[in-house]
Image (cartoon, rainbow, N blue to C red; front, side):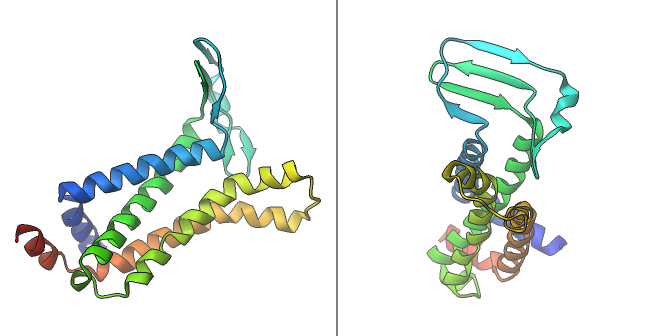
Amino acid sequence: MKESLSKLGTVLSIPTYRRLGLAVSGAYLLLFLVALQDISAGGRGLDFLTTNWDRMFDRTGPLTFEPVARVTLPGVTILVSPLNILLGAGLSLLVGLNLVITWVAIRQPRICSFNRSTGILASIPALLAGSACCAPAIILILGLQVSSLFISIFQILIPLSAVLLVITLKLMVDRTNTKLLLRAIQD
């Protein structure tokens, strides 16, 4: 594990890859919060409302939590839910790191000893995490009657996707030759 973290640190020491990871992570976090409807279009004027901070532990779904503040800006309303932000930040970090390693494999295939399509498959868990938060809402909007078994499946998608993202990241990082990468960057 220590070697994997060292390799990941080496890859992230390259500014291009670090910026790519941050950009992807930021975009994914934003989309995650939009899917949870913590960020939504609409809102007039400027407004800031808060509630008791102990409400942040109250659940609104299997892995979604109550907001403790609402920020209204012209055209956008933001519900501040620290635990949703923390969960989304963790997933988005994993998605960003997976994409960075996948990008290394696509751009410089001799550095990574795995098939390029394997790295692209690493994005599937991220899609599962995204569907886990908004799929139940879509089902309710469409008015479909869904069994409790079907809804309970969505409860495990976010933790499952996090585990799959960690596994694929470790597998890809372990097969990345950072010495070749540093030499290729210097040339």
